[in-house]
Amino acid sequence: MSGLDWGALMRAGIKGLGLRPREFWALTPAELALILGPRGPAPMTRDRLEALMRAHPDPTGKDET
Image (cartoon, rainbow, N blue to C red; front, top):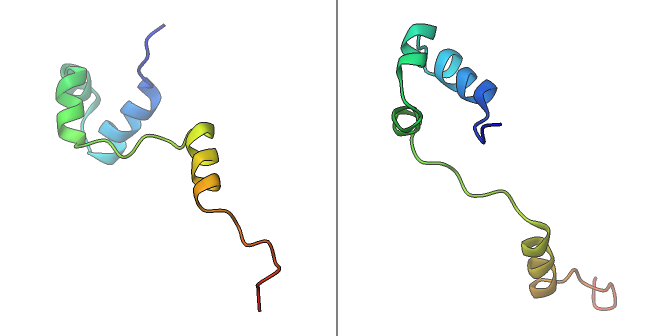
């Protein structure tokens, strides 16, 4: 099984960019990635969330006004 999400890529290329199916399928994955532009940040992981929670804990309520 491929690691590519073809459904999302087809929506981005055909619906988002307005490519015709023939144009979409003529592109290589690298060409499509170039057209779509840079990827956003990676999704938040549980480890990263826990590290942020340790670094920035919620107030305990004792000093709140």
